[in-house]
Length: 190
Image (cartoon, rainbow, N blue to C red):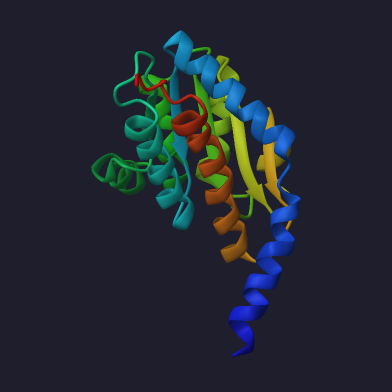
C-alpha cells in the first residue's frame, strides 16, 4: 500500500515546520499562568475540539496531580449544553467568546486551535481575549488564516492537509504538556 507510506512521509516533512522557539514561548506563558493562578481556556472545532479537551486533561491531571502548583485550565469545548444553547438561541460564532465573558480576566490565557485559521467562533474568542488583556496563543495550519496574525503567539503548521495539521497540533501540545509532566517532574526521594 502506497498511501500509508505517503502519509507518513508527508507527516515527517510537515513536522519540520514546528517552530520550537514558539513552543518554548508557549511553555513560558503557561508556566507563568500556572504560577500566578491565572486561568487557561482552550477552544477549537471538530478534531481541534477533541485536541482542546485532550490537552486540558493532560494539564489538569498529568501536570497537576500531586504537585503544589496546579493548572487552572478549561476546555471551552466541553460544555455541550452551553454550546448548544448559544448555538440555538444566538449563534455558533459566539459559543466560546460568551463563555469567556463569564470567566476570563486580564492576564488569563486563551489558546485557540484551528487548522484553517478561519473558524469564526475561534476568531471571536481570540478577539475577546485580546480585548480584555488575556494572552492569546494560536495553533493554526496552512498559512495561518485570520487567526495567525490575530493571536499574540502563533504556532503554525505550514501544511495544507487537515489530518497532518491536526496530528502536529497534538504533537505540539504533547511537547508542552510533557514538558510539565516530565521535565518539571517532582524529584523522587530514594
